[in-house]
Image 1 (tube, rainbow, N blue to C red):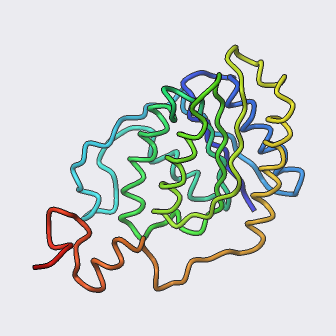
Image 2 (cartoon, helix red, strand yellow; image 1 turned 30 degrees about the vertical axis):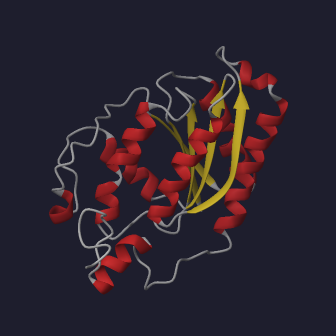
Length: 214
């Protein structure tokens, strides 16, 4: 079993990375192989909406995102970590989410992975991170664990948040235990229901098209 942690912070060695590493330590203590991935040293560009991936199954943008997702696709469980920027996740985290469309369009290959979220805020905004990732997990048919958050501003001070550090370690353990449950979506629901209805019944979900009929 492999659990990967992806740190969506532009800063190296910051509070988010500390918490994600703690979660990986918790997973490792349960016997999992772990890998820590950071985006602070990666070239990550936004989705340009070309939709070429619908035909090719690949993203045409030449940066580090495909290599990051190659590592995540090899994992059974994933810890997503981000600091809070303007009441939600970082721009880097959002770019990674948006760029996952090529994976969704190519047999929804993130499906059935067990994922957890860690966020670090100075005061407000942790709930905004959870709302974003909840939608991301749902569309990709990934299974969500509990949401873990901490409070810190200065680099390294998250270690003073005793609750956050313990919760992060327990999150890693929880991911391993959930992976061992071998959870699976029904095979016929290989895509999110809003797309399933369009494929099976020919009814578009877009309000500007034929969603409401005559």
